[in-house]
Amino acid sequence: MVTSVAPRVESLASSGIQAIPKEYVRPQEELNSIGNVFEEEKNNLGPQVPTIDLKNIESPDEAVREKCREELKKAAMEWGVMHLVNHGISDDLLDRVKKAGKIFFDLPIVEKEKYANEQVSGQIQGYGSKLANNASGQLEWEDYFFHLVYPEEKRDMSIWPKTPSDYIEATTEYAKQLRVLATKIFSVLSLGLGLEEGRLEKEVGGLEELLLQMKINYYPICPQPELALGVEAHTDISALTFILHNMVPGLQLFYQGKWVTAKCVPNSIIMHIGDTIEILSNGKYKSILHRGLVNKETVRISWAVFCEPPKEKIILKPLPEVVSEAEPPLYPPRTFAQHIQHKLFRKTQDAALSAAALK
Image (cartoon, rainbow, N blue to C red; front, top):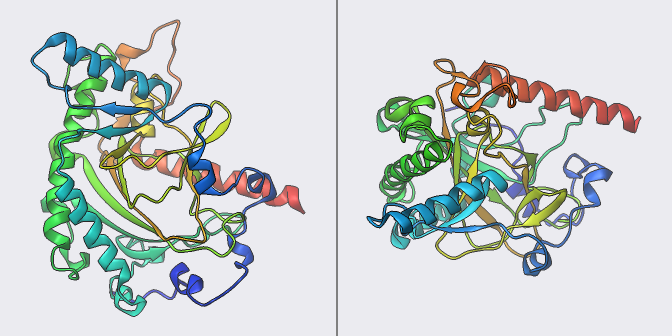
């Protein structure tokens, strides 16, 4: 693999700089809303991201089962994000996944560079940092490791970390168990739309075609966290996204016109509804705008797994059962690849307009 020459945020952070380079400073209209994430997390006033207990998602007692499913459906419709507890994946496995990812990122940068991706040539799997791909030249305060983790036969094991030795086994097992959890969630969301239980999963590719892509986000300590973002505001293109983190706050959701900081809920998995499910449900389920803050005290790491449909094989559009004369389709038919291009084009346009406005 060719070694990347992109500067790593980790090396910037450890260089002793007191001021961050201007490419990392957010535009003025964003700076007004960036606060101290630790103080924000302590704020119990106002709306809070819902916590959904999945213990009874398959209960034999119909009333108990329906109550659990109704809560999940409500959170998907109102928020599009939730903390999942009693999700069926053991604390031990979650700890192994997090420990393995942390050990990899604790390696010297020169070791991590052996796994560097080559974004320019389209090799996106591997170790990387965001390249400026918009008109404003904006960068994010993070490095990452990205790779496909499921189905197993579609993985490229040549770019999986060899250190630590448990990385492959722990990540493989976690991906398998997440895939089972995804099926349960798709079932509940399908029933919530009045569809057959397996419908949404089938629409996003089923067992054979749905891809699980893991992105480990590494947010180094930032000397001026009030000026930067770890990840800029976006919605996920996926069907579902599952996120673990190292219990350092940073995730913010844009809910009812305000940024809400997600609490750190022990042993939970954060789940986002992605654009793909929002489109199929004709907007009934929400893909919420979110971003990541950074801080000057503690490194934050998150493990995001994006459940994505195949790029070309499926046309994404609102399902016929969820549209009517009163509720016409809100989204035009597109392949997943076309949806990605549409979002990139809009983002570039928006950035160009912002840059022009600042001149």
